[in-house]
Picture (cartoon, one colour):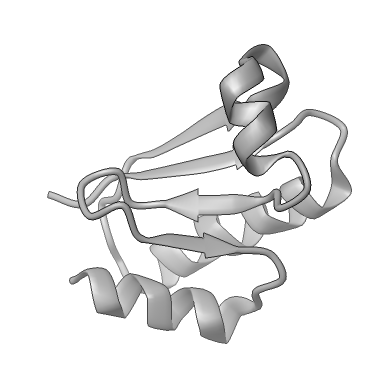
Amino acid sequence: MIRLILYGTYGCHLCEDAEILLSEAVRTRHLQIPVEIVDIAENRELEDRYGVRIPVVLDPVSGVELGWPFDAERLSEFLQDLS
C-alpha cells in the first residue's frame, strides 16, 4: 500500500500549493493514499535535509522523492510511477 509524506513547514505558501496539488491528484485518480504532513521545523535533521528543498513528497517505502518545483502533471507521473 502506498503512503506518502509531504515535508514542508507551516506558513510556506509553496508547501500549501503542494498540499493542494497532492490532494487534487489523489482525488482525481480516485486513490486511497494516506498523506502525512510533516513540519520540518520541528526536527533539526529534517530541517538540515530538506530546508532549502521544500516542499518534498516522499514515498517512505521506496525512498523516492519529488521535490519542488512540480506541477499537477509531474505529480501525476510521480504517483503513476509508484503504482
